[in-house]
Image (cartoon, rainbow, N blue to C red; front, side):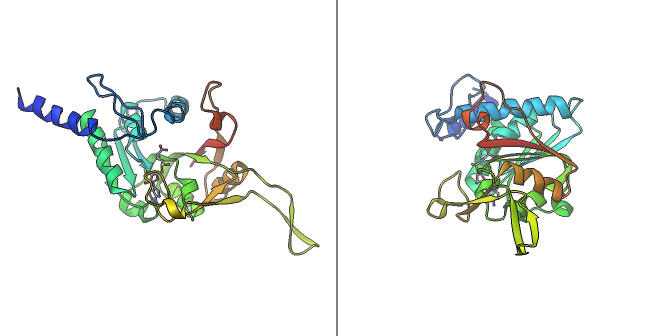
Length: 257
Ligand SMILES: C[S@@+](CC[C@H](N)C(=O)[O-])C[C@H]1O[C@@H](n2cnc3c(N)ncnc32)[C@H](O)[C@@H]1O
């Protein structure tokens, strides 16, 4: 057996021994075990289709000179999608070391030279150190954070052209708010729901602090414009897509610099 074959088999063996959050198949056709018995596959497939449609719309030309960053990449499923879509450089970043190791393993298995995985908290990223990127992805992160507005500001600072954010959302509340006096009122622009993950910070998909604020869709769109994106909108969901996205309980939002 050649050294290359032995190395490839060792990579496959490592992957087969792990649990994966995503529905993955090795290049030789063997399926990897998904940690939720396939119950969450639909959400990943729907999001991947929505991201593909956005790329076809806004990044239609040759992407080999473009760079992207995937914030909270988990095991790198969407980073890999961007690399396969032709982005020349894809930074896969997550706070959890074990996810970064898995993302790096995927990059090796699928022989992606574009993808580079590294560990960082989203709040530690700075454009002067970490660069700016044509596309910033922030999927499944916002509603696990106690400072979601700060994270949106990080995404804006790192973005050269566009940012795509995917998040769980809470019901919107609208109306006028007395602001010091009933004679001085302000319109409510959106709201956040407080979600408790305090006892789940060990969970691979959870918050690292346990205190979470999930925005309303209207609030998120308002915030994106307020922090410096010129345009923001909710991306369309396929009619057979995952129920939460179809019913507006999660949204994927595009924002342009
Ligand atoms: C629900 S998973 C979403 C993963 C992936 N982006 C997706 O949408 O499938 C949340 C991810 O956020 C990461 N995470 C949580 N807090 C973070 C932080 N402050 N900075 C960076 N990553 C964080 C977790 O480790 C986990 O991988």
